Amino acid sequence: MDTQEILLPVASSLDAVTIGAKHPRADDVKIIGGRGYDLRQPIPIKYQEVRERFLNARQNFWTPNDIPMGEDKLQWNTNQLTEAERWLFKTNISYLTASDNLVPDNVDDAILRHITANEMRQYLRWQIAEESNHLESYLFILESFGLDEQGQGQIFNLYQEIPALTDKLNWNLTFTNNVVNCDAPVGSMIANRCLLEDLLSYYVFEFLFFPLGFSQIFALARQGKLKNTAEQYAYIWRDENLHAINGSWLIKQIIRENPGLWDANLQERARAIVDEAVKLEIAYAHASMPEGGVLGMSVHTYIDFAKFMGDRICENLSIKPLFNTRNHPLPWISEFELSKEKNFFESRVMEYRKGSNLEWE
Image (cartoon, rainbow, N blue to C red; front, side, top):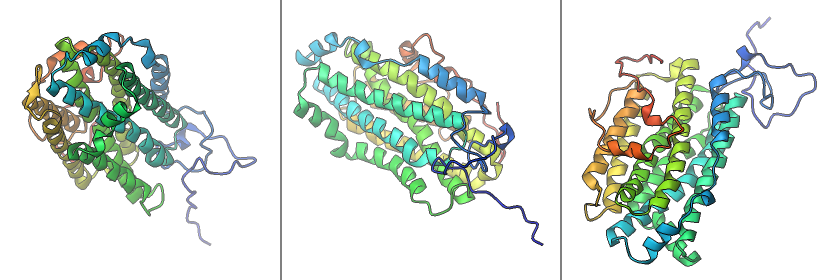
């Protein structure tokens, strides 16, 4: 008689509802790879911190129309910005708009199919809504300048005209497609590795690409330019900070529950992902600031910030930093943190610990 345990398939939101199915126990629930329970059950809540993040995010919801844009409209239409500043703004908002389309698509197409804890699924669905709100913010900014659809389209379309912008977007899309096109079954080691690499790339998105982009507009605002737009970005940044915190936690929780994933090869792959991202940012810096920068933000400082953030990602993942940076090149960026919220940069970063095992806070 075969006494081998029958392994149930990984729970899926497409599973049919079954009469008489048992209520899951907390011990049954896994962040990924959970089996034998229905994902539509909102309880038990195993990961209370995820539930708290959802409740906090819901309290923080805002709308772009809450922020008056009259001062920026005047500056834009009375040539108070230099040509270099206008170009920086155009490339910046084009990339960020495309990015905030990319992120929710990745959550929906690649990540959610693997998540088997209802509270995390709930948070990620809320994140999708927040990203949609960010898209509305970018659209509202250009509308408030008085630009018609053609004028807006010329700006938004730059991500399809400038290779440095296109390359950044396609880089993240590669990871999304690796998950979507993975032939291995959900819950397998191969599928989980594809998922973890994707999560790492989008953690880079939230923690490196977004803050770098916001910093350019914050630099203009410190010179008295596009301050209304900077306020919009500050609210978006608050949301993205919380997404980054959740992304970091999700990566670590997957590794806690699947320690075999985080082997030496994947740790080296994680460092390579960060290195690739910083190189993409260097190219973007030159494309968005072709004259070497604008008042308050030079290409050199921007690149230093990219390397600084890359090292912080490595430290938070307990892998060896790439650039050995220590001093924050933009200490003034804290001026744009919303005071009511704990900011991601204030979260304690774990010290780098050598070896194949992660140690957790």
